[in-house]
Amino acid sequence: MSAPTLPPLARVYRVRAAVELREFFRQRESVVFTLMFPVILLVVFGAVLDYQIGAGVTFTQYFMAGVIAAGILGASLQNMAIGIATERSDGTLKHLAGTPMPKSAYFIGKIAQVFAVTVATVVILLLVGVVLYGVDLPGGAQWLTFAWVALLGSAACTLLGIAVSSLAKNGRSASATVTPVALVLQFISGVFFRFDQIPTWMQTIASVFPLKWMAQGLRSVFLPDVLAAQEPAGSWELGRVALVLTAWVVVGLVLCVRTFRWRDKADG
Image (cartoon, rainbow, N blue to C red; front, side):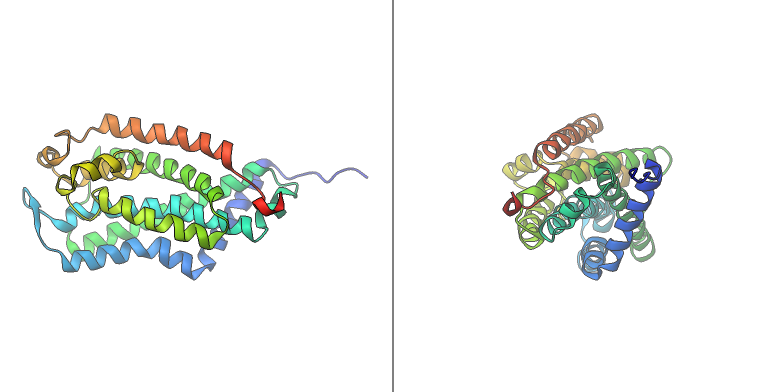
């Protein structure tokens, strides 16, 4: 008896992406935590804090770059680390590895999920910012900068999330491990405060990770160039932003290849 003919690879990828999206949006906790949490942050902080950043820029205008970066981090690194660890511990990954589905389809589905959730998060944040707080949107070539910073940042954090998922025993331990780290990174990376007001040693730690560079690149989009003087180097350093985020994409890919597991450690 001949083996069944598999459908075209492109169709397998589309089906897997659709499955990942359905699974995500059926889980209310995931939707609220990943999609709505940064929106809640924007609404609450935008309503409570009202100090000037300089050059006539409001806190909400400054905060928009950071909260979008935090939203990308949540949709990629946190979402991947927790979701994949959960699927590994409940046997989903083991089952998928034993099917004829190409293993690459699983990762394509996850990438599609991250992309869709990231776009939805950014669109909602921009709408809320404009409607409730009068945030000025980027213009012209600034949208191109916005796109490549968000794309590189999302890619780096997605790959890191996949790699980090192998460190956790299950989804619950992944959440307990990743979420506090993500919150700390947000506090030291210029998400909630002006980056130049953070202690130098915290700035140094933040500079190792992609969130700081995502937030800095997005600040160049939402803030006037005169505020670049507040950055540690006195400029937006977009070239270095691109270099660091690209380096993290490479590092994340290497870590994924070396650490990803389809089975729990207990399964051997």
